[in-house]
Length: 223
Image (cartoon, rainbow, N blue to C red):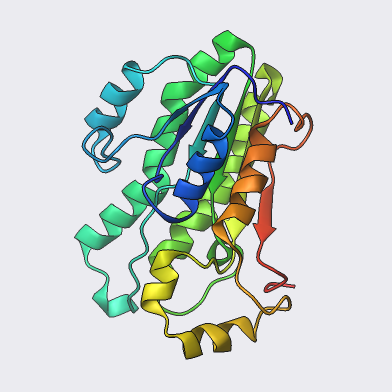
């Protein structure tokens, strides 16, 4: 798989799936991988996004992983939470794409991978805001794939199912994990590295014709 001499930005790389993506990409020492900390890039602040992007070189790839998930029923959704969820999960990825696409055009192409979720394909109670944002990610991905395709920029989204991250282990007891896995045809959650390998392929020169897709990787949960 060819990813030589590429510059990639990965948000949300401090833990979980984002961390696995960054580690996999950095294993290829010919890649220059940017993984900003929050003090460098605050996705809730528009000026922070603009300042950070102005200080990095033209990118070959952007991976929008960072996101938050606040659960709550309808009556509990206050304006601050709504704004925070939409800004971090939907508006910030769009702002980053706006800032890096001119550089990709100058370089003659690029790859953008957005992160949706199985809850952006179907939904569940108490996930109104999360699903709003993730359904929005899919719509944005499809529209931008059409708009940016003529410039050689491929835009895709990944919709992970249940992933065995440190946060999953913290939030679910062993018995709860077993019960959850019984609803997955493969009878296990994904490892973060399995998601990372899909990201790496979509970023690579091996991906020459996949664009505008929301790729579900969930062990068959939604089948």
